[in-house]
Length: 240
Image 1 (cartoon, rainbow, N blue to C red):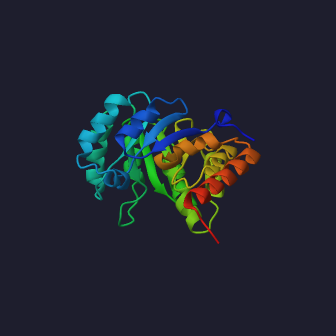
Image 2: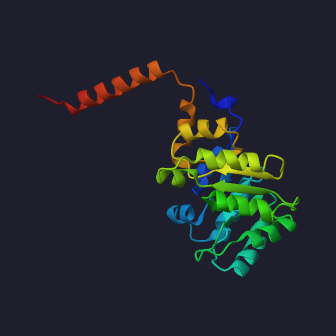
Image 3: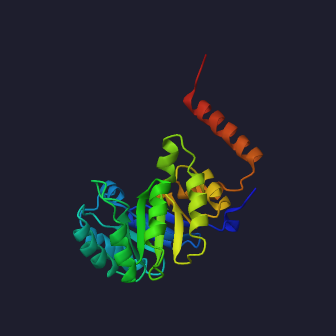
């Protein structure tokens, strides 16, 4: 069984709890961090800029993805430049479209030409991937992460491994472009993503600790589980 230390894929911590992010920043197996407006909202963040500055003061050597929050492409461009300026390790997250379905690929191209590192997010379809490849064919400047929302794709009954494997192959020769398995649902996804050559996977803070289970002996795990059930039954004083 594969061990965590033998994985080729980079693991990024996905969340917006500052103390937890700082905890995982000290761990070598976590190679970067991603956030989004929903995670920020759920963590009670009220001041985006203040939060970002606090994060980047402590996390300054690993990639940190921070997302724009406008629906206007012009405002996205302005926000992207301001967010990028917060730190040399910042990737600006740009959704693949705005809420009206308007593509952001021209904006992504513009930002890459300015050597702004971009994480294009909420990618779901092969059509979106092919459009990115077409319009960024001659762009060698800047660094790009393509975040494919594998977990949400899987929620619809579709195997996300296919689109991710095809994307890895499509951009194989583009050293400035990495494919990211996003919206991870279980530790098995880490193994699946690693097997198909995906470059990065985001792991929610809620189960980062579960990565320690990779390679665990299943016989021992079975026994531990039985013991847990027995002890809980004993504590509950069940009778029949």
